[in-house]
Amino acid sequence: MHSTGLVCHEHYFWHHTGASAGPLPYGLTLQPDAHPESPQTKRRFMGLLEVSGILDRLVRIKPRQATLKEVTNYHTADYVKRVRELSAGVGGDAGEFTPIGTGSYEIALLSAGGALEGLDAVMKGQVKNVYCLIRPPGHHAEKDLARGFCVFANNVLVTQRAKLVHGCKRVAIVDWDVHHGNSQEHAFLEDPSVLTVSVHQDNYYPPNSGHVTENGRGTGVGANINIPLPPGAGHGAYLEAWSKVVMPAVRRFRPDLIIVSSGFDGSAMDPLGRMLCTSETYRAMARMTLDLADEICGGRVVMLHEGGYSTAYVPNCGLAVIEEMTGVRTECADPFLPVFQNMGGQGLLPHQEAVIQQAQRLLDRIP
Ligand SMILES: [Zn+2]
Image 1 (cartoon, rainbow, N blue to C red):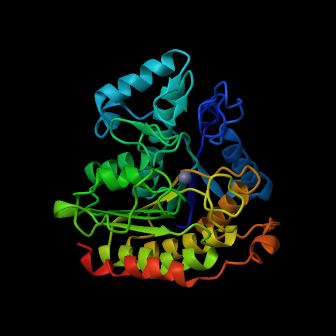
Image 2 (cartoon, rainbow, N blue to C red):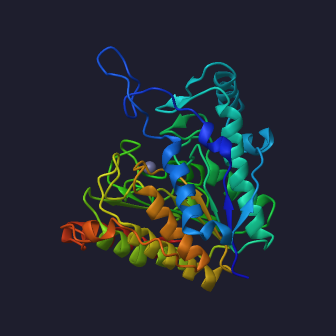
């Protein structure tokens, strides 16, 4: 059984981040402009899936709204109420850099619930793996605060359900978004049954977060690994980090399920990230992850869409990942590759290798 599921819904594109100036609120000295977390990257990703023909090979999984009980399993009731109240009006900032619009509460519940349905489809064996093209994203959301465009911590809720409902004993969350996956780190910092590994741009967002020295706490010591790559890291550095630290960490941990926080903002085209990844970088990281899942956990992989702000390039990066998940290579080659692969600095550089080696030394501490 090699089928791949896809979770998406038109309402995901209706979550309205409003007028702003890039990621900041506009004002009298900052002219209104578009918000980077727009529906376009996701809509165009879906568009390429259809045009490439691969959409016909995917099993569509219908999302549902997460229940209040599921969401408050992690988030505080006060925070959830605040999101609901803003959404019932004209919207506003639900925390830190997270503008929401009318109806965004219900859409955020549908985003979280879509991830939960994707999990169920994998755990029940309806599909082997699933890509949840959900919005708003989740890997910055804290239990009591929206952060970095994220409302509910989708990956935390999926992990909780995997353990509570599906009996998973150990879950690994690996994160290739260019920003630090602080949601999962904070949620499971003291939990030895959840391994969290994040590869991200050093000290970017959230500020002062995602340091290599943050390695879990209390009973969770060793079960959180950060690989903060210097700006300018490309294909070589990402593959070195993924093959020498992320994959060995997951192999040692032997989870029942692998969750991928999949953001494409480490691409060479991204307006927010300062990295050089190509669609081939994401393809290779996906391939390694899927192969390892085949080896240790029956191929069970749940991918949750996170960041990625290049409207032009996110679709090609996303298609490469879906091609690996399905094992179907379409005729839509990435037209950007000849330029991006030729960029200086794509290979592994010594200052990048030094960071990766530092993280590699943490492998012996995995519980
Ligand atoms: Zn990001």
